[in-house]
Structure formats: C-alpha cells, structure tokens
Image (cartoon, rainbow, N blue to C red; front, side, top):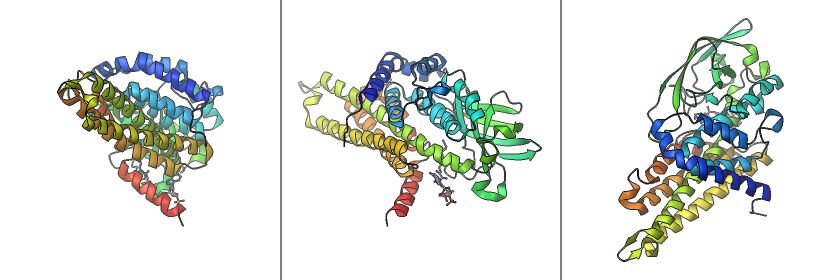
Length: 385
Ligand code: COS
C-alpha cells in the first residue's frame, strides 16, 4: 500500500496551491464583502483545468481522476471557502450529472460551455418541502405533447443567480413516488424561469444561494437528462450525484481546516505571553496536536473515498463517512485555531472568523450530518452480515 501521492497528483496539488495562494486567498475577504460573482477567477480556473477536473478532454476538461479533484477541492478551499462552494455546485452537481447520465448530444452541447466557464452550472433539488427528504419534491412537470410544463419553486440553489445551465428535478408522476422524479437540463433564458432573492448566509458569502421559480416553463422532452430513458430516474441520479458531491464537501472541509491549522501554527510562533511564544505552552501544543491528527484522518478518509469512487461502482458509504467526519473535524479545527488567536481570532483582521463561519455549512449542505449517519447506518447494516 502506497500512501504517497503520484508525481502527477503532486504536480496538480502544487499548481492548485500556487493558484490558491496567489489568487484566491488574497481576494477571499473582499469577495465575501462585495458578494460580486468571481467570474474572472472562474475563467482562470477553467484555463488551468481547476474548474471541471473530472470532465474528459473531448468536452474541454482535463480528464483527471477523483483523487485529483479532491486535491484541487482542498487547495481551492484552503484559499477561499466561497470559491470552493461555487466549484462544487458547478462541477460536482451540474457537470457530473450531465457527464454521467446525459445523452451524447447533451454532453456535446452543454459540457464545453461549462468546462470553459462560458456558462456556470447549478443543481436544483432543494425546495421548501424537499431538503433532507429528497423525494418530497413538489415542483411538477406535466407532459404536453413533446414538452413538459414545469411549475414550482426551488430554494438554497448555489450559483442559481449566475448560472446559465441548470440540472433540475421535477415530479413527472406524483403517483410513482420517488420513481416519478425526473431530472431535466434547463437553459437560463427559457421563458417562465426566474431567480429570487439571494440568501443572507452566515458564511461562504462569496457564493450565492438563491430561489428558482418556474411558471409554465416548457422544456422539450430532449431536455430530460439522459433522454426519455431518464424519465422517472431523477431521484436515483440525484443520489449518485450527491454520493460523489459529498467527497467534494469533505475535501473542502479539509482545505479550510488546513488553512486554520497553518494560521494557528504561525500565530503560536509569533505571539508572546508570559515571556514566551504561545507555541511553548503545552495547552497550545495539545490543541495543535489534536487539530493536526484529526486533519490527517479527515484527509485520508477523503482520499480513500475518492479512490473508492474511481474503483468501485458505488461509493455511498465511503463518501458519506468522509463528508461526516471531515465536516465535523473542520468545525473543531477552526474553533481551536480561533481560540489560539484569542480576541484577534474574533475580529475581521484575521481570517479565522471567516474560516469558522465557512466551516459551519459543511455539516448542513449536500445532506446534513444526520442524513449522513442514516446513509452510513443503512450501508453498514446492508454490508456487514
Ligand atoms: N445510490 C444509489 N441508489 C440509492 C442511493 C444511492 N446513494 N440512495 C438511495 N438509493 C436508492 C435505494 O436503493 C432505493 O432503491 P429501491 O427502491 O430500488 O430499493 C431508493 O433509492 C430509495 O432509497 P431510500 O428508501 O433509502 O430513500 P429515502 O426516501 O428513505 O431517502 C435519503 C434516502 C435520506 C438517503 C435521501 O433522501 C437523501 O440522501 N437525502 C438528503 C438529500 C440531500 O443531500 N439534500 C441536500 C440538498 S441537495 S445539494
């Protein structure tokens, strides 16, 4: 068993790290202050292959494996938590369903626009009545000849305000339960489609979560993800998409935790109290020891889940465990790093309070940690005899 990253993976990490240090970290505080969408940054990321790592070259992506995507996700989040959230919604939740389930025509039409950042992607599942209960979707798609007429609302949709391409879920057959849910691809300029207010969130404020509204939106049957064979398969597609998306959440958690640990170590060497640098106090050393140990475990679990995704047909258990653990670790690590900074950590003069706020969403989105525990228990009870 070799735990070392391959030369290729190291090169990818170094390139992503340099980009995060030079471009993302310096603008992270300003990005959440202005809440201006970082269009230029995303274009640069697209040029470097950082925006859609797993999309094959034939569609304009770099065609990397899931481990490379996790490494990139970590480095991006280490620089800027908001940009990592934008990346996850664009790549994991919009590109990946199109790549995994789309017809050849859909892939050829939509993926090049997404890999080049000509258009940004979003994923519309969550509704007032459907969050943890993903099958509770009320947005309806009623067949009318070759078209489906869509009415309903979505909420908390990351990138929704700026995206040009959406993968959305709607109910095509309410009597069929979760087998009546269908995924569609929607172009932003489709008549009847609009977006609502941007949420005032606690963290990841450089990204935007928005409402989506559908009023008699007519989508041709060719817009069903996967074509007519995709009819009624939307719930299962969403579950698969979320499985791999959760590896991205784990990676971003590791990235924010890494940034917090580095800041705490640096500060502990600079700050003096009682005539000595903080790093000399055992109370501080124990905090650093715990942060570093948990961070290593979270990174290993994330890399393992990425490996599982590339090597097994199903990575539900590995992804849920990585997401659950890494998102809890980033909560503890940012809390301790802030504590080491004392009052300074509580101010906007240091990035700690932003790391702390950005970390909190990780236990909530792409499936709350309570849902992860349900998924994990279900898989363990199924697998262990
Ligand atoms: N991969 C493939 N199939 C899956 C799956 C997965 N990860 N998870 C569930 N399924 C299948 C099940 O095998 C089952 O199929 P059968 O009916 O053939 O047995 C079907 O889907 C229904 O599964 P289940 O009965 O477990 O569905 P539930 O409605 O009870 O809910 C959970 C399942 C809770 C796991 C699901 O609703 C979920 O993940 N919710 C969280 C959604 C979420 O992350 N929301 C955040 C917003 S999206 S960014």
